[in-house]
Image (cartoon, rainbow, N blue to C red; front, side, top):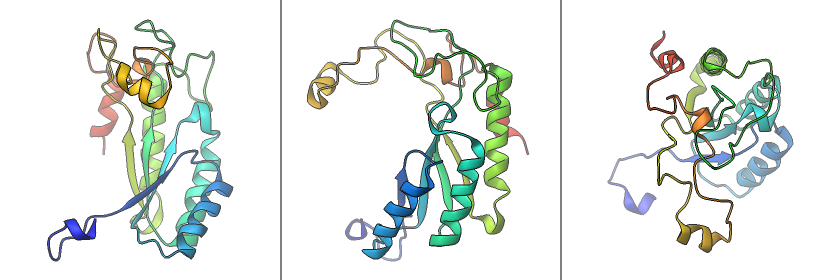
Length: 188
């Protein structure tokens, strides 16, 4: 990247790992990166509460990596379902029953989850919590929308199926109307 930037230009580098609640994985990986003097600016984490465990473990991991590596953290992937209904023929990434980590699967639950994630990141001292990136807010169940082309599926040898497994976690309903949970991004 340095070779492709203008003189004096600084492009922040994010190193991103999944499973934000797995402190052991983050310590192992970032200890190795540190040992090899890899230059980076931000620690990126993915957190999906239905896969990665309780928020408390994520918060503890964030606090630990900031203290250990002295880098700010960005929650670069997160999402929460507003329904368990399916909007197309491909199974949803999350289609379980009941609450997820104490949040109900509903538009209200999605908004509550987002508000809590934003507050958690905002409350990190010294501006070391950079915020969240919602994945994928506008992946709607429309004909032809799929996670990969047939050629892409062939290339990675993954033929899970065509369609959208994430439409129930978007910030828009199946008809493309914005959900009230989107308003959380405008709150102060």
